[in-house]
Length: 184
Image 1 (tube, rainbow, N blue to C red):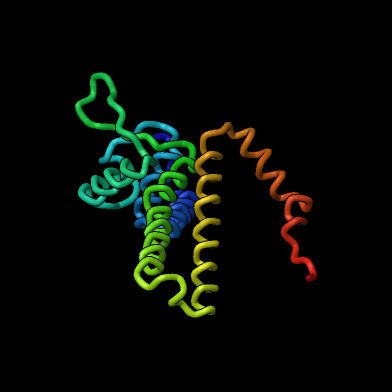
Image 2 (cartoon, rainbow, N blue to C red; image 1 turned 30 degrees about the horizontal axis):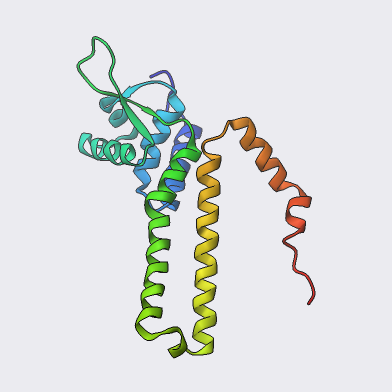
């Protein structure tokens, strides 16, 4: 591996990647392992990962399996080598889209299904006015979450140039103007 991950700025960056993954409810070490693979830009074996991160072979192995589940890394066969190598998914947005659809979106839909069952069990008329308002607010948030998740998923499938254009548009004041509160 060409990169010297003992350099303080790279160690700090790996820690930040760990915190980023942790923010999505994943283990910090997953972000650190992915970070080494991503930043190195080359195929890396488990022993090299273990050496760079100071983690046990078992921790590296379980982290790689979980990262494969999330679509963040893939195994790579190298001709003439008996050991397995790994490389990172370079499109971070694809990883986030996978996490959103496999885990968070599932939770949102489970919440919506529970609300539907509550309606069916008691009947909408049995709910107080205030409770109906709050249930509708939950429905609105789950709808918004599904739409935003779909936006992330679709965005993860377009070119980086298109993503930059979308971000630029969204950062513009014109985009946010229509979200400003209006007086009623």
